[in-house]
Length: 308
Image 1 (cartoon, rainbow, N blue to C red):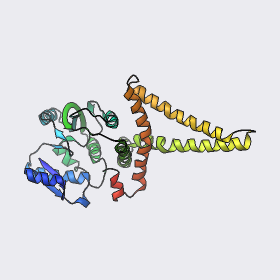
Image 2: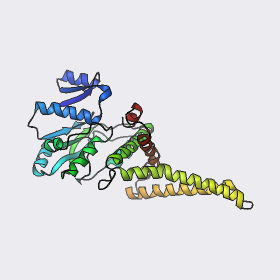
Image 3: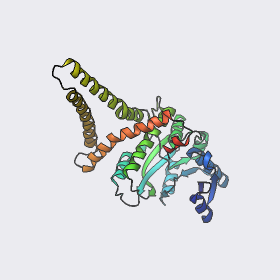
Image 4: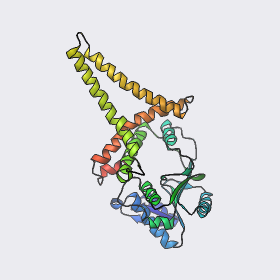
């Protein structure tokens, strides 16, 4: 086991006390990909004949049976270069916003475009692809998976238990921050791999911009024009009523979107309607994240806060 920790962090002190191999990194010069590459290099020095490597984020516990299952699966499927299993929570989350995040992240077994940050990789494929990119600050694992697929490898998602995490009591503010982070990630992914054939992040980015900025702007402009037209060309017309009618039409369209999402999630469950509203309103925060990516300096601390 190799732990990667920032200089002076509690994680570094804990690793040192437990006698775990660790890599100490400079706080101001490290991104996720660069940190993971550093940990991998240390691991290869310890075990040069290693065939598989499992990357694990902070606060994640690997299921005792996972590594045995994963190694057997990879031995049977040499074409698979990256494998991700199910992450379970140690208890049921009480926060409705945490349930919304988990529901959005649910995925099925089978071929996948990318894995999450906790996944097992075949070392020869990992090295052939050049490892993680150290010059990007969002979704470095997705970038690696796409590059592996371009080389003819496969990425697989399994229903087998892989990891355990403790549920978080996500607040409204934390959910909004997560939506902003997602928007930032969509934009970063689209900037790297948004073109054909991957189209990674492109649809999500377009949806966030459409529902979070373009459509509201169109409704506001239409309401303004309706009010002006009513005042100038309609005898006895009420410009405020005309503008308000257009605004109500726009709200009705958002309401229809909520209904469609709720029906898709299961209309008989009350949570489906909460989920539909959260997804719809979340587009506004995702659009903020997209804007931060495209209009902020990606190398500044302010931009990094979007993906912290």
